[in-house]
Image 1 (cartoon, rainbow, N blue to C red):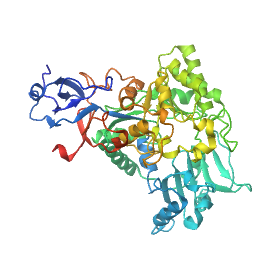
Image 2: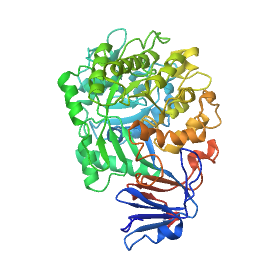
Image 3: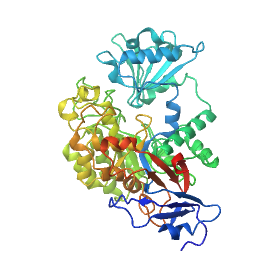
Image 4: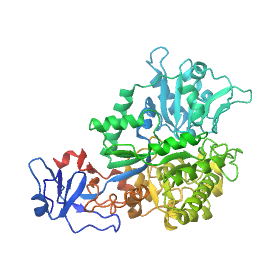
Amino acid sequence: MYADHPDLVLLSARLLDPATGAFLPQTALAAARGEIVALGDDHDVRALAGPATTVVDLRGAVVTPGLVDGHLHPVSGAERTRGVDLSGCTDLTGVRATLAAAADGLAPDAWLRGWGLDPNTFGDRPVAAASLGPVLDGIPALLDLFDGHSQLASARALELARVEGPRSFEQSAEIVCDAHGRPTGLLLEDAACEVVEAVAPKPTKDEIRDATAEALRRMAATGLTGGHAMDAVGDSLAVYAELEERGELALRVRVAPWCQPGADQRAVAELIALQGRGGALWQVAGVKMFMDGTVDNGTAWLEQPDCHGQSTHAFWPDPEAYSRVVTQLHAAGVPTATHAIGDAAVRHVLDSVERACAEHGGAVRHRVEHIETVPDDTVRRFAELGVTASMQPTHCCEYTRADHTDNWSRRLGEERASRAFRCRDLWDAGVRVVLGSDWPIAPFPPLGVMAGARHRRPSDLSLPPHGPEQALTPLQALRGYTLNPAWAAGDESRAGRIALGFRADLTVFAQNPLAVADTDLAALPVLLTVVAGRPTHRDASLG
């Protein structure tokens, strides 16, 4: 029995095991030093509490291992979501009205920032500044499209950045120009976006830190206890360190810094040396890479071009250079997480992992992020190679449609759009599927993502599901946020279950999430969130 007083005691709980979907026989737990140190009945566990112990009577609420988002961007997302939220706009009329309201009252020469712009709102018009009409005339504006891989710059912003025509980049990026060589305002991929970002006002370090802290608090309120952060750009590692020092790091964060095209041996060696850096609640573990862009932008890498003749190239101009970097990281025991959306991109990532495993053994747990359209033979290879499939069901639910009238589906054509986001096929093939939001690309509440994985419908539940045969079961969706992210991180012996010696990262629901209807799941109340034995969210109903 545990000798010292625990930090936290939970009583009258129903403890749910995601491995079986059944409740554990115990009704109470105690946590100390960030771990679960006792499981038992209410009487015995209550007796462990001391004067400083936080004791919570859950009155029959359901406790699961803490939910972990398998793919998000906490710091860059906090910065990216500055300005006006365009994610609720469904057509150009709405976009223009929202921008006009934001522009009204702007100080002279002030920049207008926006985010979440859906290319579907443009209908048959080109995604270009001119399609917005005069609303941004004379205003320097930079709007993030929802995919996080493109921006729309106003004419004044382009003027300030001295963008007058096309440019060449080391990565696959583009300043889109019309037939006369004039920029349309559309910027594809980071290198092109950075040309305008370089002249736009930047938030201060304190502003970024505070915005990140607020975003993490809101995430904790939705039941998240952790996240796999797929970037370490700018000062983000310093942000995590400062938030932890201030006691404001509300999630446990696993960080994978970027490796971009052009990275030489020294750059890769620096990424290897960075592994393991961190604190109690954050750590650098892995490297994030990109094999392509997005279908909506025409920058994915497809085996056959899209309907516009686009999406024919890799993000790395020399795909073989990507393969060499994967091998170098693999040999050092560093797992990779590669953004690969198109079938050609996913195939090349798997080829690269297979080569690395053949040369150096196969113990490293690599991942592929997104996997939006792949053929059957590629599905099988994930399991053969032990590669994790990291997927975001709400991308399919919110940005594609069952009738294939959306931009993504039209670009791909009927055959490829019909094999969209194959969560269930991958699962049934024996692949470990990790679920996440890719926030700020899509909303972060995990119950919404799990619901999307289960019903494949958009938030407007009156619309039909896209690919209902790819829906996950309730237990599979829960595992996608608990057991599977723990395995992908190599933490299966200390995370993802409620057991002695495991992390005291816990999420408490008003009801059993496995028994709630798919269409009601997103509204299930989260009563308590615990990270390392410390409550990061507590509903008022618990007193």
